[in-house]
Length: 195
Image (cartoon, rainbow, N blue to C red):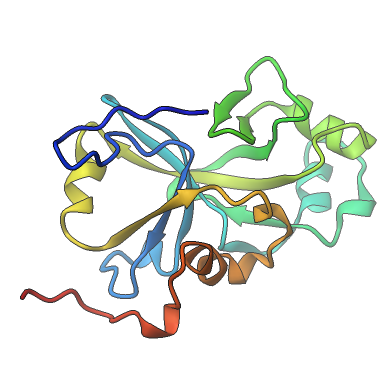
């Protein structure tokens, strides 16, 4: 169980690691249109997350691995996600915690984040994690930046990362993660108002 200390009297979590951050329909930043971001790291120094709902056009996991001289033609059907606008040449693997490497970091209760080639080699060889999502780039926020953005109504803080996340159709993850929180995206307004 992950215990997140509250930052105020409402009991709201102070940090969001291990949860979903979902872009609201009126998100002003085009980089995050319909973003379904897994919050991997969030502390007083900043935050790092991966958008898992935006495939890199025309790039399969097999093609990505071939660039590292890892043969994995059986993975040609698996898309690679655009994890975010920061450092788009850097790769990350969000995976189930049934596999762990030297550089793996826990993300919530059921997931880990790895950034080395070891996890890709293990996946190609058939002894890697049971569930995984591969992404290039990440979404990053400096200290206090995400907390400030949360006050501007562009983001929805979802529940814990769904266990079925890797099985969801990538382009439907935004809708499905909202649905897991009990929200029908057809009913969301494009702009926030004031009462």
